[in-house]
Amino acid sequence: MRLKNMLKFRLPIKSNSNQTIMGSRRKFIQKTLGLGMALPLMSTKMASLGLGKKRDGEVPIILCSRGESWGKKVLAPGWEKLQKNESLLDALEVSANVTELDPDDMSVGYGGLPNEDGVVQLDASIMYGPTHNCGSVAGIEGIKTPSSVARLVMERTNHIHLVGEGALRFAKAHGFKEEDLLTDKARRMWLRWKENLSDKDDRLPPEDGDYGLDRPTGTINVLGIDQEGNIAGITTTSGLFGKIPGRIGDSPIIGAGLYVDNEVGAAGATGLGEEVIRTCGSFYVVERMREGMSPQEACEAICKRIIDINGGEKNVDFNDKFVAVNKSGEVGVAQIQGNDNWKPELAYQTPSGFKVVKGSYLIEV
Image 1 (cartoon, rainbow, N blue to C red):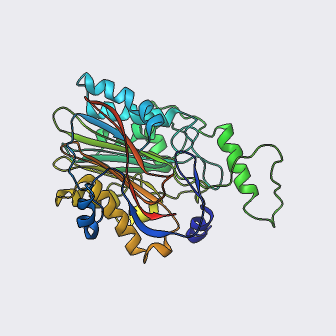
Image 2: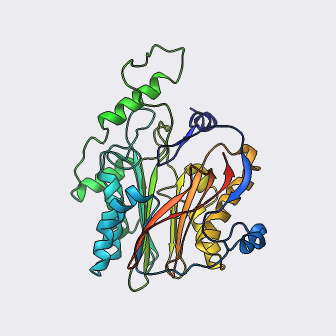
Image 3: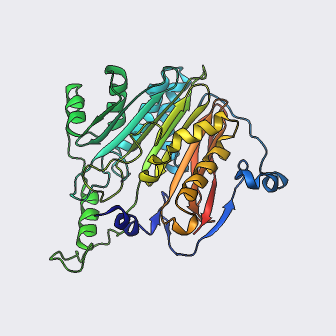
């Protein structure tokens, strides 16, 4: 299946809150909800509305690219470790493992949605600010926690990226158990998708149950800063549902789905990975923060960049979302498409408590 057909089929887009977004009319407008300034050309207007005010950050902090429900589950074990002044990497790993091990999350790890052949292939990356070291795995099968394998690649090899069968052998050599990652729910959703790809084949759709025909993408970013101000991040995913076997998205690509600089901050991406790869999305966000942008402004800037390189909003029938945190603990979140009922979120935990931030979007759908 060609990429352009994949993009066409994946609409309507589905958010983490399971709200389906329909409609072809899109207005290129900025909707900012209580966060930092919008695009540079709109900064004067935003400042006049009181939206350009800088927000004070707080560290230590741990955040993820989800809202309240998943955010509380994901961040709790990691925050417990940070409170005990344990390893930042341990904190982020145990938080990332929450979604990887939960079959109810059909976008990450165990229970993740399979590729075109019905096989679950997972991608993950990790990066540690103090050493600028990183590790990742891509297209790994049979291992529930690819982020943990990515960490071993970072810490136990002088490589950065292991893929496919090699990544699986590496994981098994370090004691990981090979398991079937395809849950019954994911299998039935895959069958329904296959049976409705064409009206000219011999497959008939099931009469019982409605397993949906959307092609959701799903990923989670977990970023954190410890009490010493050290920064790290993890991105983990099962990738695009129904992808061509062997397709690798942005999540395991350092600088695309994840980037960390200990002097600046960290950023992560979710959504259509091809667009994030060709813009070096997370690296772009960190570099904009290095130049003085707030995390919110930087996340909006990469969304605008992706829209621009596609020739404007009329050519955008996909979505990407970015989250970021800077050295002082300020956070930001923005996505390309959205509306009043579908706003990007991130959740974070600091000594002041658990909070959810609703961000901005650039194209109304």
